[in-house]
Image (tube, rainbow, N blue to C red; front, side, top):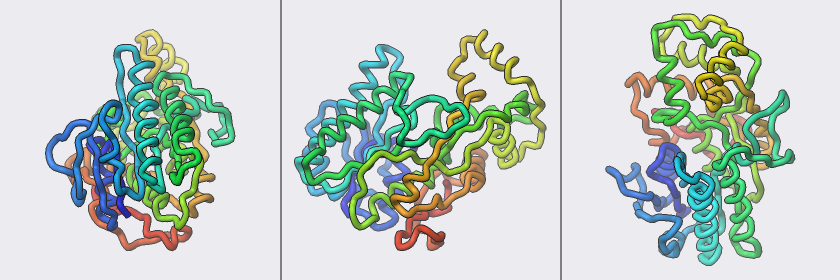
Length: 340
């Protein structure tokens, strides 16, 4: 299959491009600015600004589009910046794909399009979408303009809403957590056992996208996606420290104390990530695509830790893996367990 992967210069996009190329797809990779070598196996590497460039050459002759390009930060006028980077770019790309009769359009959105927190009940697709941030609002708008752009065309849109994606080479919040956990000192996080947050390993993201492309007929709709095991902050930190080889214990400090300290420091964003819950029910995707995540959380965290400490290359999906788990057949969707 000829597949366009946007955002192929990023953490997730590069991994997806490598994985699809390794499993036999002919990949055209789109990046905003070329940096260094093209992802392994990629046939075409194209520099294009999705907000402004002529996109017909990108989508021409493609069987599928996997849209991972996104903007992570917008210090000035975030509503406008995120709207342009997500909604406007997605609209233009989807319209170009529809004109080119691209059959499948897989858009990697975000759980933030649906919400930022849960109160003991996991998010599910049938629940209300109530984004709380400019980023989340722009992702939800992108989902809506995508549906409008492909309506009545030969293009079928599949939208994936992942939570925090982690893996070798992870950036942002997860990189900061790795740095925090990779210390010989005890951490005051042992008491954060009441919250639960969903995660998605990079290998499972690659496998899910590959599965979405592999089903005989495109499957439309919006789907939450996760590893399937929601962790408390204390449990996540404990597992990460074990995989990093850090044996110092985490001692319990009451959540109320940490919350007060973080709010006093103006770090409400950190408070939400460390103390809040964001549980994810990804059962709908598993049923619709007859898919089981090929990697457990511990497998994903172990590879992330190995890459962080320099024991493994941070490249994901370099070669196919012959192992298939029940529920995946006939799709060989398990990515290589190398550098994930």
